[in-house]
Image 1 (cartoon, one colour):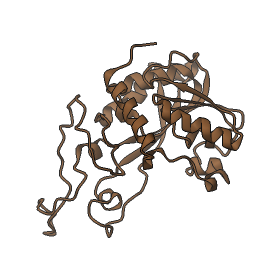
Image 2 (tube, one colour; image 1 turned 30 degrees about the vertical axis):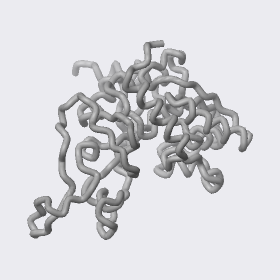
Image 3 (cartoon, rainbow, N blue to C red; image 1 turned 90 degrees about the vertical axis):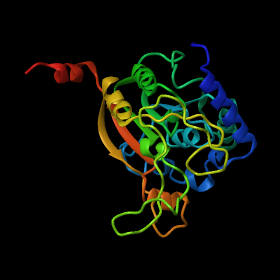
Length: 277
């Protein structure tokens, strides 16, 4: 196991505090979600209609939602999270619903506690923004995911992390003469963490340190780690008629998230890709 990174140690304390504060980011899955647990977590149908018996790693996914739902859908689930308080929520939900799952405290950047090819499916909700090196995360996942296994992840888009959270009525408008906008504030190529926010918002976690990952790091990094991308969507949250500075209004200008379906290449498939024709 690697020594704990100072940024990750900071974010562990942040998430423990958010649990204590009963933040909206730490809400366990509601009863209605368990009526059709796979449909709840896989509305796009990427997982083929069943995960029964599959070995599932819910990565950086504590909080009493993803792990219990994938377990209720028939998966053999392991939840890894850096926050012990978030993992405790998984334990509580699992006990209440008599669901079997395993919880492991650790970093998404170091999966050395798992065997090579240990999982059939890796699920990662929004969390890569909390580490400096997204490529290291991808390489760790590639090691523990079996060849042809699926990796489904969601990320904060670079431009969303670069841009102000609040509507600026004095910003230069568009070609129609409309004034106001969200302001691009962050250097795209900076490797430093962006300034933490303190106010409650649906787009940023108060106090957390986050990093902007460029598209070449998010998408190219997946390919370089041995994955092929099968699908990519931007979850829709937009409503131009919503109040300025709200999630819905800002999302009409800036898609906040991207969800990626990637498959780990096996040795045979990799040799075909690398062959010189």
